[in-house]
Image 1 (cartoon, each protein chain N blue to C red):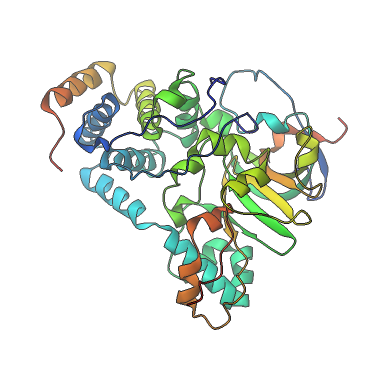
Image 2 (image 1 turned 90 degrees about the horizontal axis):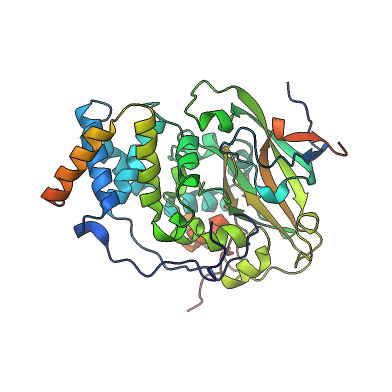
Length: 98
Length: 210
Length: 97
């Protein structure tokens, strides 16, 4: 059961450095920012465990989250309508405002 | 990672096929040991190389052209890419594909800022620039400037939507069908569709008039 | 890497050499049907390369370095047999194709 639904506003955690140090698939530039769930992609093995070769890594819900470019980059040089969409695992997300 | 370089590319490298560099030696040593241990066979490696060589942007161009001429196929392509693409004869293997439709209101462009994720099961191996530090750093932050370098000008009132392929999904842009192509066959349409338009750094140009 | 300052995009293409395509093929086999290592392991290993690796190594050089480390970590290969085989390959020169 996924924690968030399409259209929910979510906030990306801003944990750095990660503990323990590993390979993460959440880019720096969205950490600490809020966006909107665009779709639920399904469940996939947690890459932070797969990075250590754990084939039986627990499965996690993966979302696509849409961010306003103007929110991510100070002085963004483009249209206010421009967006970026990226995939983020559930454990990196909180409800917006938290 | 060093931030002092103002340009990204190393000096041109010669074709390395007749030079035994350290890493080429490593590849041969690792491969021969894996074969001796029975983990892979030489035939499997050869087949894998051939299979990936056979995947080219022409496969994606066929998919795009079919979507342009067949609205039912287009609908199915967006809803269930693996099945739709399978119906025209291309197996996209384990890939979870998302098809991004360009519209008069939205232009899509794809990047992988964390590594080099690419719809390789349809289009083959990615071009060098797609893997470059310059493209991966810049297209998320200044997509319109990057598109301009590829000769693509997107109107101010049209949204540019960047897709960062950060995890398990892969992306194929379905470009807009250019004007002036009403009389063209599906094969002629496919011939207009280049790799870069399916990554989203270009649009498909109309055919040149004689 | 997303969002960092960088210069113009070099659109020069090169054809992959056979050994590079073999690195690609080995990775597909080891991460797919053989279940020997994961793609995320490959990525973690690439990120662990020295800071200048991105400029001093080519794409598939980074792949084979990371792939080999993962095989050593997993005990699929030993450093001893790898070292010995690399010495043999170096001494012999390129294999016939």
